[in-house]
Image 1 (spheres, one colour):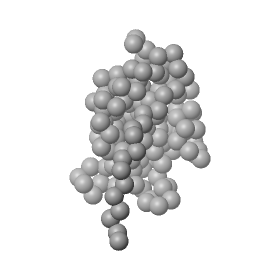
Image 2: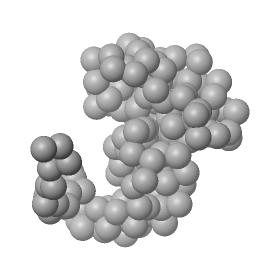
Image 3: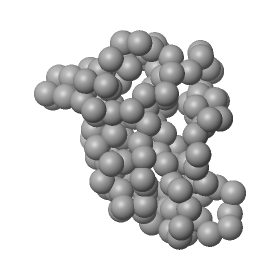
Image 4: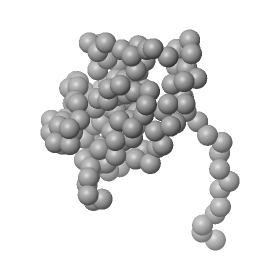
Length: 135
């Protein structure tokens, strides 16, 4: 595939259940950095951007060497990405979630490789058996 493929990770500071979750760094680095590192390891993706309206997030991202696209406020990540890609030269946009630090980069590569002429693709896996923890 010869398309110019980028990944964009939408990030907001005002998470309803865990405010400032993207820049929480209890493990030694901010949560958003883990997602950025996963995208950077993808062989299909040539550029990774964090799209945010938060200067606080932008400062953290720049601090670890990430690229930032500043956006306005948006109700969801999809709208934030739509604004972010307006002036970016690309053929395919990978919508990465900033709170999936353990995603295997090969999942990104596999999803991009099956895209073909489709307008979109979503990575999915079979539902794992649920074992009840509590009696």
